[in-house]
Amino acid sequence: MKHTACSQHAAAATARIKQVKIICLGDSAVGKSKLMERFLMDGYRPQQLSTYALTLYKYSSTINGQTVLVDFWDTAGQERFRSMHPSYYHKAHACIMVFDVQRKITYKNLPIWYKELREYRPEIPCLVVANKIDADTKVTQKNFSFAKKQGLPFYFVSAADGTNVVKMFKDAVQMALSYKRNSNDFMDEVMRELENFDLDTKEESSDKDEETQEGKPDSA
Image (cartoon, rainbow, N blue to C red; front, side, top):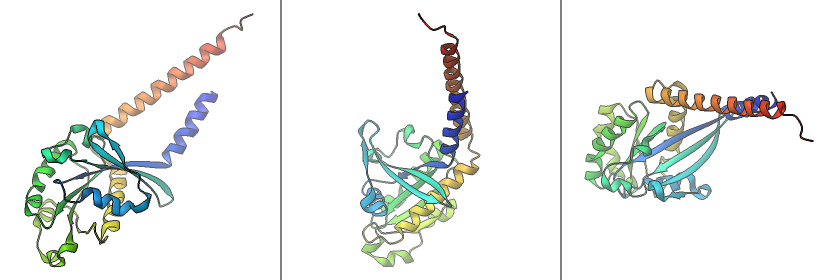
């Protein structure tokens, strides 16, 4: 019983903390890592996960009185193959898709990235980000129609001078949280059921172990 009470208390504490995963997509050298570093500035602690060929950035914030832990996943060069391993998309709650306004090919490749994203995560929110506008601010007058055609939010940003970076990332976190709360994604439902089943199984096993220990006679 004591173990069950502790488990319930721990579960309640965990419920007050929301964890979300946000992935970045786009061609090489569009500035994905620089955007992350600009947003997180001195507080960021990038962790290189060479096994999965990615860089993981940790971020925490308090939103409406609730602690939010965010894992930002960066491609770490894997994007040069124009395809990501399925595990990269696993349980992602939002996506930031970046192109370089100075290189047309990075914009033309957005549909390729978007198609792959929707194969693995058909429902998650996706933000389209035009980076490096500091090189030529006139570019903000251009019409980049991809986001509008897909009904996606669009941002002009600069990792170099910080323009719009904080707003874009904070919007991404809010979208990820909203998606997690209201998800109708079938795969999310499956994963939740599996996680709950695994948790229940572990608690039942632990309770049985305690009962067995209590039932054993003390050795002389």
